[in-house]
Length: 100
Image 1 (cartoon, helix red, strand yellow):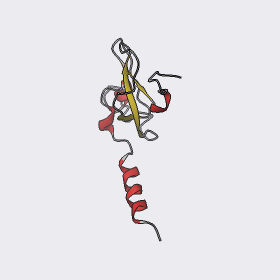
Image 2: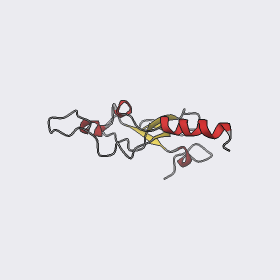
Image 3: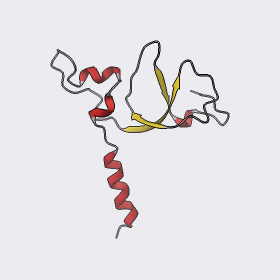
């Protein structure tokens, strides 16, 4: 017999599967039918999941301790002079510095 909470957790995990609506702003969203090449789905879409990340702009100075976590696709790819880096919370040390 399963515990009641286990069934709810399974449903929650299903909701975290990727949907193209989360791809807006990603460089690879071009491949989700937003091109004239006939490519209709990004090559990362089927394996992608929503993950918790901390958005850090390249212009921001540490510490990053009080930054809010957000959900972004695990395959997120952004480039450009004003891009934001999405850092895994485990890569922020106890002093709020980003470590690789």
